[in-house]
Length: 92
Image 1 (tube, rainbow, N blue to C red):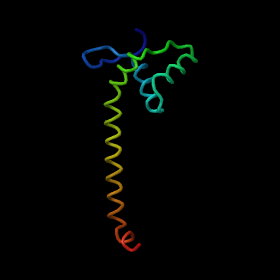
Image 2 (image 1 turned 45 degrees about the vertical axis):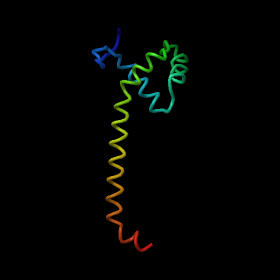
Image 3 (image 1 turned 180 degrees about the horizontal axis):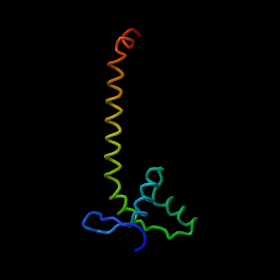
Image 4 (image 1 turned 30 degrees about the horizontal axis):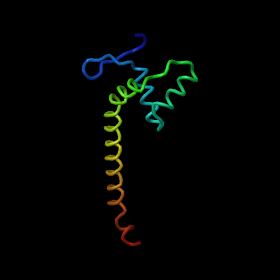
């Protein structure tokens, strides 16, 4: 295997570039098929559905954690702003 790698669940060796490709496709709102279309246009070997799912299971929990933290920060900010502006809100 060429390139940087990291250890996944069950001590499996995973490619950094594959993790980043799957993360990027999920972030862009596309999936396995769209990623493979891009890879094919770049003349890069495509990723099997099984391999995509393996990397999706790896990055999924990190995406969920980041989303929960973002929602928590937004809720805290909204609460803070409501408390600061309560008088203005009650006058309306």
